[in-house]
Amino acid sequence: MNFENLIKNFARNIDISGNIEPDKEGGYAFVVDHFEVKCLPYGSKKGLLKGNICFLSDDQIESEELIKKLLKINLASAKENSEIITKEKDNFLVLFRLFDADNIGDEEFIQMFENFVNRLEFWRNCSAKQTFEPAMFQFIYP
Image 1 (tube, helix red, strand yellow):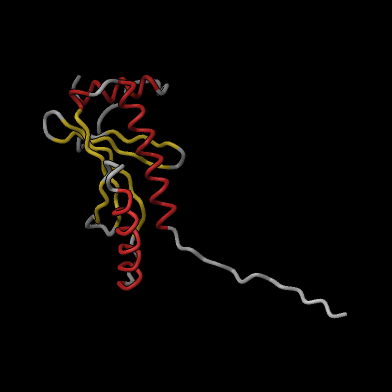
Image 2 (image 1 turned 60 degrees about the vertical axis):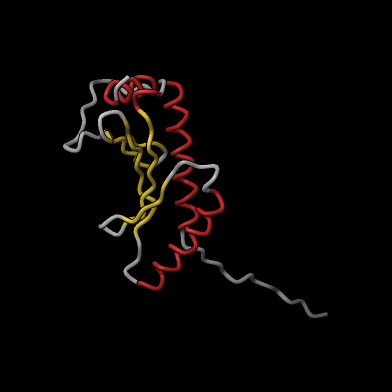
């Protein structure tokens, strides 16, 4: 099955009515649980899933710390996962997953897409600023 047919079958399987058309890059955008995932052709037989993780701060030290943190987490889980994290020119960290569009069935693609959305959520949670408020203690004196 080629990339375009795979994506159109996917849209039909998840109950998107009407005719979906590719954007100027030949990609298709799907919004699932507030996550936009783009499906893009890659060469003649492959495809890419792409989702933005986060925007990097203009503060270089803060951005470097976040990247170091995510790289450590990525190293620990690299064996089990097929996604790649990259930094785009527009200062976004982006999650990618390459797949063979010619050799993947509809059900397998749906499962891969769902897993990608889950991984995107995981990386967004990892990249979120952790703010801790001090615990409030109340001292009672006798």
